[in-house]
Image (cartoon, rainbow, N blue to C red):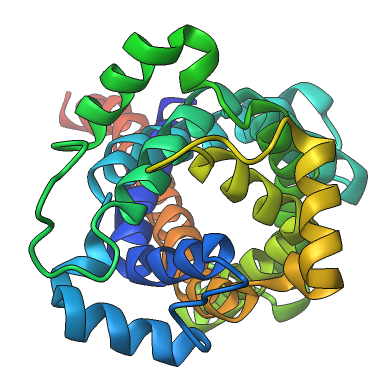
Length: 302
């Protein structure tokens, strides 16, 4: 049980370092104005951020996910592992249900974390050195939002987060289980690392594709009000306005950068978690064998 949490923690930290630049690009593309767009696409957005804000611009807001995602992954893998033990049989349905339960529970941390991340990523857009920073860091961002809007403010986008995360994590763990079985990811396999990377990367992509339109609405709601008045009255109003102004393409904005990010991030996360658990379990088994041998050695010495 404890190992599931530790493995998730380590995997989460590794995933954030790999994928945060892609996430910054995704958010910028999702919330930019359709009337006066700053970026023409994923590559242009990357190029513009690096040129105008330096490489550090791609890592804006990393403090929030580094703190949050580390614990979120610990919760996700811990809850999923415990849920599978409670459900008993290792079936595709149980993998989906355990993943969905993990996704639902981690929303409590995920929503405020992503709110701070989104606000920090939007801060100083197009400026190498922002003339006036509204937030000093992710924690300061949440404190200021709480002072202004209360608990409801720091949980802005909670409903869309739950709608995204619950089925998304179900698909995530179901896909990984299916692919890892199909690829034959055994501990004694010489190609286990590339197989785990492939299974993890593809599961991340499948999870994002399954709920991506909801993520667009969540990002818009959480970025709403930055630097001006609120544009949306709620989820339905955000969907209506986005559809009216931009059509169906609005629900795929930033998808390319998201999938480019999803593969390496989730490949790194799942491979790290799985290899860590394999190593720890093998180490625990070897310790048990040593303990089992001690009585017989003591008996023979007598």
